[in-house]
Image 1 (cartoon, protein in one colour):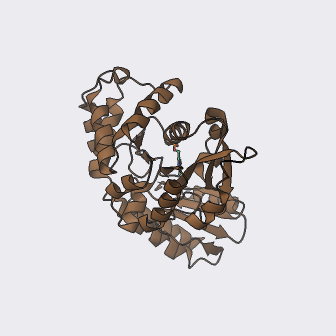
Image 2 (cartoon, protein in one colour):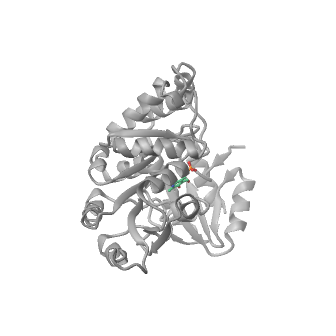
Image 3 (cartoon, rainbow, N blue to C red):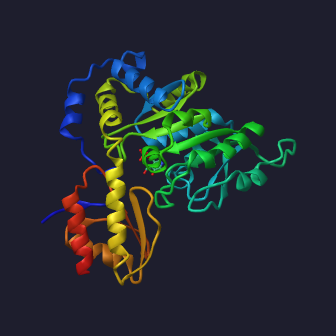
Length: 338
Ligand SMILES: Cc1ncc(COP(=O)(O)O)c(C=O)c1O
């Protein structure tokens, strides 16, 4: 039986080319700054996004949490959408690691605007209020079904942050999906953000890794924070080599995942048991079911298709590097038969 894993874009396995690159990586002790492949990845990723420096880390959660630690002081407050990964799915790390409170806003599918943010910035002269020092955006928005910000939408938020002396961090777990959809240039991101987390282990298909990008001074401090979190790693160049390979070979192909997502959404639109499909922009398909989502997930599982129910009537399909056209055709045929 064909198996198709649509649970997440984190389930991918390294390709033969990626394994070859990892096998032949030149490595050293990264805590001594001697791993040339790690150094190369950090320089390469920073240049791509118009940033001064980078720090290679084990996970997107760690790059986000390090960013928040770098851009705030204890007792500060950050502003984020109520669906933000940094708040919902990082184990309460904002409070634990940074002793910072979070002001949650109701964005449109997770997309915030300067008009929504401005009234939520606390008066810095009133001691009743925590000091607002950071805004965090997510692009694409995971819980928003892969919805994208364009740079035109980001520019007024960046201008607002500058005016109020706030830092602006981007959780770019799926930033390359956003760039593939919007056609914006990665290098322009550096003009707007104080920091960017770029994940290499989701759509780009590396086994492990995320890069935190910022100015040199921030990255020097971030290296210290990473060490405190136990993230000072040694011959990490084997993993960085996978990251370099992914940046060179797996960015262009993201459009294929987006096309596959559209094909599945189109088929779902013909299914009588589907009540709503969140408009698809990138590689995530969120849809609602008339009956129990768990029951549909179980039926799909019996046919070799794995996916997650993200609510009692909501299912998520995630397209990625390891989903090929014949698997998409198979899912379409199964959907027709349900
Ligand atoms: C939007 C977003 N940010 C951050 C992360 C965290 O990444 P990691 O699983 O590498 O910690 C994820 C993971 O799915 C995510 O979807």
